[in-house]
Image 1 (cartoon, one colour):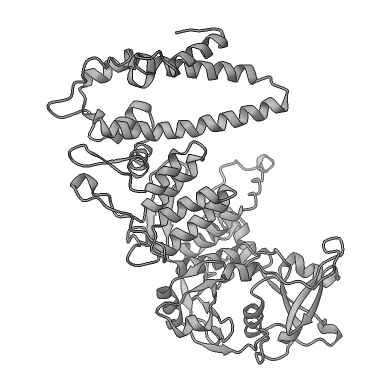
Image 2: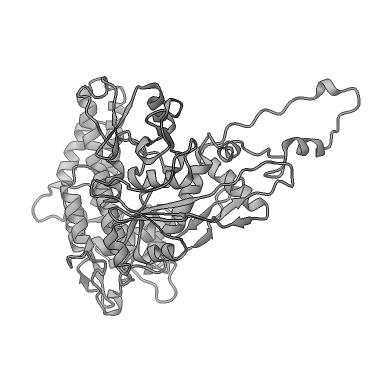
Length: 561
């Protein structure tokens, strides 16, 4: 069919969508269904060409809204198609049926012919992947989504309600965006046992909130009331993560640690998946923060990408000396200098530091002295992992990186270790089991706070802030004092409120943490530090805070909530 006038296409679409009484509807007639699809695609193609030179911003907004709505309906149609393929056992048809459908619309007046022996496709997902040209994993995901959001079936072919009834109602609602619903359904399904409805045992959702309701019910409520998709995603992630920590509902496969080799997608690179526990992840976060700190030798070393022609971690000059020189004598002028390697990106810095550790034999030196700190008001645990030392026998001077785990918890959680949990300095939540493991591996030193949060006794004065005192400052303030700053603890510096050269003491009541940029603001006086009720507060410049009110950074308190 080739209709050149858009008005003709509109009339034909209306006729197909509103048929004459007594005639078959487009959804039940193969010829009409194919015509409807071809006309719809042709109409949208013509519309896209007509709107390509549009200058009116109102029409552009109208087009954006229409395109988004069409995309939503297309998403629902894809999942419905997967459901119909599974319901009709389309993968069991004879090969001649597939060949005929490639040429002509289906004739629904004659029944489809099915294989009497071995079919071409073993599952509906295999047929879907081959028929529309998508990866098999995507096809399997669509079939699973159809069972979770449209309908399930038993061995007799009887239709059963979907597994996630509340999300299914939201998915079918034309006023809702189906993409977040699909994402949420897949996220919850990872923690659910395999559905056994086909075997005659209909399963209900097992991932539940502490109030007894299913997580999918809570998720549907969040999706229908959230003001934005990112807000809904954050809330749902917290719901799923909290419920998944319950040993009765967590999936052992999803919690399995290890280093997994991913399929090779390029001849130039290789990909691996690293899955670690929350506690191990916190040590990695600290390791990465050290590798990204430009003010330390470790951070500077990680910023230099290794020479591709040399072994990682070797002295570049030694590598150059070992490289054969094939130029004839007297041709020194024909030599050229290698272009300097570009500075490593954030991801490359962590990789460089990690590969430097793996290249050489590792030596571990367990930290002595203060390994952990607990407080009575808002206890803090700091645990130092074994120091990672790189040998310098190759001539390279690689400094050591000592990852630290800093954890904040309440005293009631410390008293009830069977149920207590904690938050790390990087925002990760430690479940009770990993919290107990951390406590078993560390020394404990009490740091007692009064009711206002002031540390009463910790450390002694000296010009360089000792590690004990740094941990005390972090236990009190957690991070940079400037509101909104989110620099990790490893990137912080400690500022003397009363300068040392003017008689200031190195003590808790004279120190305030700050990142590199804000520390410079402290020193220059752009940001003032004052003490009030035993705690340091900042006063921002007048152009940032006309009220000139003392303020503290609440980001860390919100992170631990």
